[in-house]
Amino acid sequence: MKRLSLALAAMMVLGLAATSFAGEIAVKGSTTVQPIMQKAVEAFMAQHKGVSISISASGSGDGAKALIDGSTPLAMMSREMKESEIKQAKEKGVNPKQIVIAYDCITPVVNSANPVKNLTMAQLKDIYTGKVTDWKEVGGAAGPISVISRDSSSGTFEYWGEHVLKKERVYARAQMQASNGAVAQVVSKQKGAIGYVGLAYAKAPGLKDLTVDGVAGSIATTLNGTYPVSRGLYLYTNGEPTGDVAKLVEYIMSPAGQKIVASVDYIPLKSLKSTAKKGKK
Image 1 (spheres, rainbow, N blue to C red):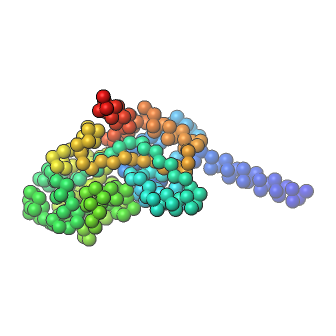
Image 2 (cartoon, helix red, strand yellow):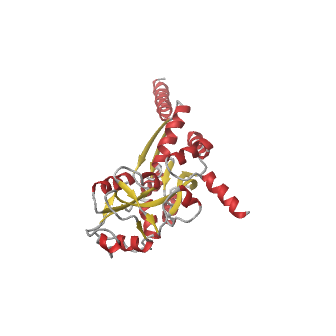
Image 3 (cartoon, rainbow, N blue to C red):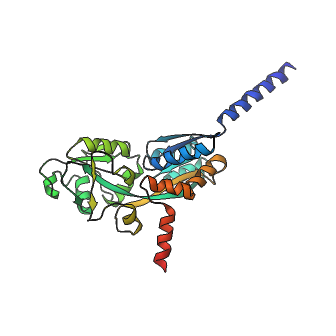
């Protein structure tokens, strides 16, 4: 009888533990996707009082790792998962499912006191690979260029490296930052600095966003394909999402969720789909 009582007590403890974690979701990954997720989560929790959602943003690579090790059911990523990550996930019984939630463009930014207004893709590559080190070489006032970059765990870093640097190594003296917000803060305080951020961060105080090849990064130029550095924003789940995770994803994909995407200066999927349909006619 005593053993039975202990067993029942243990089952009750386990049941209470399971109940305490019900409705709790830890979302991890990209700092680029974070502004969308932050607002979506606030609105979602207001409608679902029993759900608790925490957000930890430190880079797309960390989101992939968290999905693989099971510490998140929902990874935020500003790049697609690599083949090596997918392989590692499947070896651990995780089946990554990609969900496109929005589109973005990556915008080069300088200190608001910098007179430079435009850089070409070639000039950006030369700056970020260390071939150009003084602003006078790209039409600015004489002075050293302080190169600010995202760190290697960032999906934005990888996309920039592939599409702007053409897979060349980033300048050895570049200052590596862990988030879009950190890049914005450093550039806003250094007159000779240049960085790159997601569109939602480009209008931060003390910053000036540059045009690239004469084209400004915006929702319109991303939609019409004229801005040269744009990409998808993703969520990844382990197989088809279920329960509260599925409800959260559905909310982000809904008209209300896509309005949130637009409200933080990213590009909603519905706009892209309608534009694509018009182009086919």
